[in-house]
Image 1 (cartoon, rainbow, N blue to C red):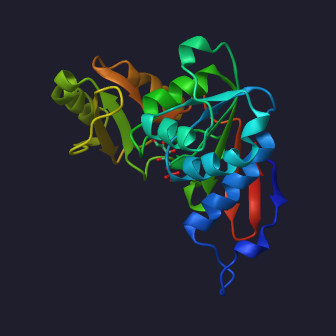
Image 2 (tube, helix red, strand yellow; image 1 turned 135 degrees about the vertical axis):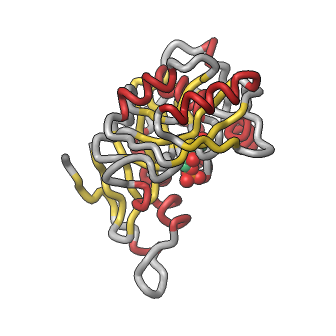
Image 3 (cartoon, protein in one colour; image 1 turned 90 degrees about the vertical axis):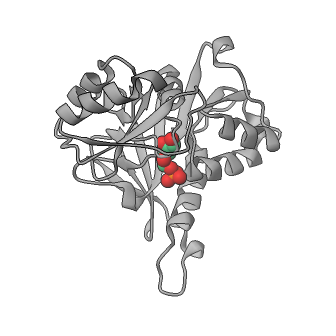
Length: 236
Ligand code: 5RP
């Protein structure tokens, strides 16, 4: 596994030489501009790190053809910057997808969906040639699963899916007062042993009533950029 310092952004440092998680997110979002392919369509994720990326992208918006957003919230933010947002059904190719994550292992398998946008995120990632994941360095873990795994569920199937997830060893918790952009519910599954991310992703997706789950392992990231006190680190 290759880990190299890309950029050292010393000016972000606080008095004790450490960055806050938000400063690391802003740092890594700015570094991700290097991965934007000029005159192409860019896929944009959801969450606070993706928001920092949208703000950075605004500075070079004249260099891209447009974007596809992974959530209504991201589309709104892109439009507020005057960045064109396209309907995915009218787009043949996305050069790069840039998004955050809740956890990543060193194989670049991810847990995503803390913001509830996992299904659209997975769709945009699937269409994109390259997936660049951006996060602060606290998101890098040895084994996935400390962060509860989000599962998007068709509302009428919620109890059934929850029982099936218990059979897989998890403890599903309904995300209260939350409806996805697709009109569905989220179960956050605690205490899953995720030794085999690809196999578990497939197994959960096979439960009837599941729209998708937040494991991005079959199609993980291609590059992981991590904001840290020592600059941006890359794993690929
Ligand atoms: C949203 C996501 C986000 O990428 C994930 O929750 C990380 O969020 P943040 O950048 O705010 O830490 O998957 O559905």
